Image (cartoon, rainbow, N blue to C red):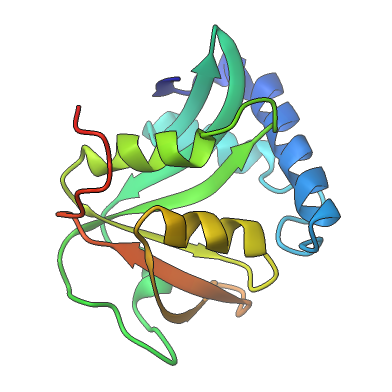
Length: 169
């Protein structure tokens, strides 16, 4: 699987991937995490412009997407019912999605992000059992709950920078 920065011309593929992911989440008991047209075009264009939106391709076909954002995430400042293991610098993974055509999109994302040498943080909806399973299988530990800017809760996970379960590049 190849990973590259997304470009504005990739918007139709990004919308297709996120629509497929919303349908999958609804079928697997998680209909409320990404509602409407989330993530919308304005958010995607902003993150493409910042160089933090990525596209995963298999044989030249777009099959997944995610954002990898270095630096402190304001929604991770307060954590409830747990704690972050440390205050080390980290990379936050947001909006990880697959169109369902190939397996391994999440692992490819995590391996790609791990090459940064930073700890990884990610959050997900309590109903997103599929993502929770993928996170634990890929070395992430549950740390507690965070609140999004609008107050909605999410389950927060992290993986240390020195986790050795990923394929070295």
